[in-house]
Image (cartoon, helix red, strand yellow):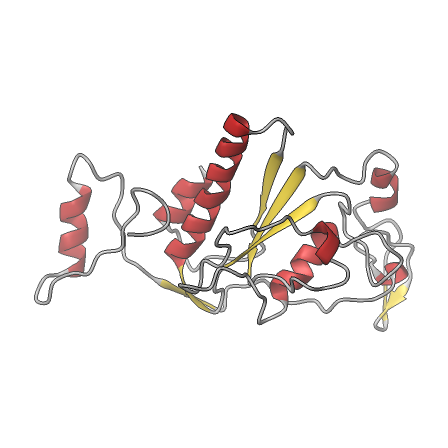
Amino acid sequence: EQRTPGYYTLTVPEGTGLFETIRAFSDLEEVAFAEPSEVSFNSALPFIPDDPDFPQLWGLNNTGQTVNGAAGTADADIDAPEAWGVTRGHPNVIVAVIDTGADMDHPDLQANILGRGPEDWDFADLGDPVPDDLEGHGTHVAGTVAAVDDAVGVIGVAPKCRVMPLRVDLTTGMNQNRADAINYVARQADDDDDDRDDDRRFVINCSWRMNGDHAGVRTAIQ
């Protein structure tokens, strides 16, 4: 039984064909889809190291400056300073970063990480609810999303939003864990609609690729 209600990972009995079993399950009226349970290897997008100074963040504001020996192209950016004149985000906008987790004590993130309470945010490890980042990719992505505006380190694109870091294994992890994480956020949004008065909105960030089509993840996104 997976963390998404109605999702299951099954063992095929010895001597039974995998694809024959999948076809048999797919023919059942009560089964929405059946597919092989696969591992996705090294599927994080390439890691870009953090830079401590805003003038080096050419993706946010490109003046044609030289960064790491490469000259930029003026205005080839997302116009972050212009956007900040309109909004810098809102604490009720929660960005769920489904990635390798996050450094929960990072000085540029800590103030913007949503309170976890007893919730399990680690979809990669059983019995470990804390989404500690062991690889750095998720921390980098979370910082790009909403690093604190505090004259320390870098600033995120939406520094007034909050981050919900959900950990999955992007190196040797099962694809169905990503579906569980996406469905978890959807349930949180539904619960907020039903139970809260603070008008929260949820955004999901998935800075990774897949090793092919996966019906569980595709259905979760839909």
